[in-house]
Amino acid sequence: MVMTQYGIKYAVHIITAHFGNLVAKVCETLLRRGPLTLRLLIRFTELTSSQVNNSLLILIQHNCVQAFTAVTEGEFGDAPKADTQYLALFSNVLHRMRFSKFLAIASEKLRKDKDCEELLEGLLQNGRLSMEQMVERAQSSKHAGNRPIPDIVHDSLFKLLNAHFVERCPAPEPSLSPKVEEQPPPKKRGAKAAKISEVPETLEQRVVESARPMEVLRFSMGDTNTEAEKSEHYSQISGQKRKHDDLEMVQDSGDADSVILWRANFDEFIRCLRHKACIEHVRSQFDDGVVNVLSAILEATRSSEKIVKTEITVPLSLDNIYEEVMKNEVGRSMTLDRVEASLSSLGCPGMDDYQINLRKIIEQAQIDEVESIVLKRYGRDAYRMFRFLSKTGGLVETEKISDSSFVDKNEAPKILYRLWKDEYLYMEKVALTVPRHSLCLLWRVDRYNLWEHVLDEMYHASLNLQLRQAYEMEENKELLSLPPDNRNEPLMKRFDRLKKVRGLLQSSLLKLDDALMLFHDF
Image (spheres, rainbow, N blue to C red):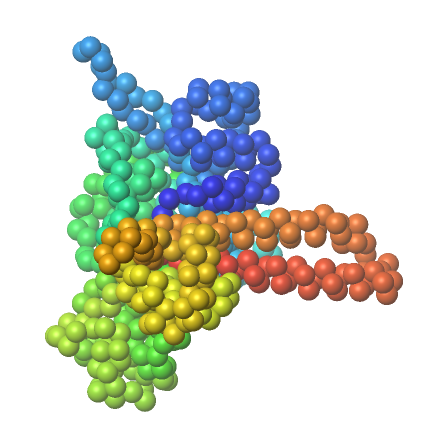
């Protein structure tokens, strides 16, 4: 999904709140103009070289900017020219608002391991850390115990790597050839272009992919003394047994003196949130048995999906699915026939191997989210007409929409016009000459453009919630600075009111972000 105007404003607000105006100005310039060289960045921002350099260092440290080398062919027989450019990572900027969700996921998966949680929190707060920096941070916050701090950090990092919640930092400056960097020609948006999965890969995705370490190193501790002990760890990473010689060859090819930097793996957290969204959507449609079967399949295919991101889960036999289902209390009460019926409800064909189409579940969740917005904003009549058009897919005339959705023929054109005016419907005028000269209005739901419009509205709403929260905190900063003992009854009422407003704003922002991820991240 492309960046929208309010999406850029929202991202700039996040950077401003976290790092200040100077860093935000550099980030905004990159978001609006695309990848730029240092010289052009200084020119467009009108900042000094030192200010731009420092801002870039902060943004790179916190994984919001990726440098890369763009190689262009020389003219008139000249040698190829390589320029270092800087690209803002829009998705990573938005992820900064999801750190609490990431920590909650890690806490649940790692069974509330406090050492792992503290290490992950440090990486989220600081962006990138070396092993030495992680040990120093742990020593400043932990009391001396029975185990040495370096051992605790080492074991915690190993657990996080094994769960793929932490990864090695990408290459500082990958190289993109002219062929890779070349943008494909834009395609016309039509009914067939509605599927988001058909959108060509963006420059951001290509740069991130080229900078990412190969899988054998991405989740590797890099300790040659303990490689034998961690062979099972590598087999989980790759999905198959790696040859020991290949691993040693890859490790020897790196610089032994270089310091390994670690960061949180946003891809894994988004994958977990995506699975959670699929489960919650299925829960709203079916019973607990279907939910339990879907959860079992996602858990059984988790290690395979870590390496290859697919829209369809890897094939599993019915026996393997049933074995996974039986691992929890709800599943033990399910018969094999009920598991098969649940698979049928999930749209799995009755074959030897079963696969779940996660893309279809997400697409249906997106449709339900938009229909919910139409229902709340425009009423039940508009909801019925919009839902009819969404299911029909093609162009439909006003009278047929009115009859099919049981809406008064006098009210239907007004509602349709309002939806069209707010960019929720596409309208096409057709001139008719038989039996008399007249103008016919045809309507349809253009999902590609509508999804982009809805996403922009969500960015706008998120920005407004953030601004309101900042306003409330600024207005009551004197109240917050007072010790609790110095607050009289009127001040306590103000404090309680601020606490409720802040909680409501934060809760609304988290729920809105869940809907936002449906359209941008999933």
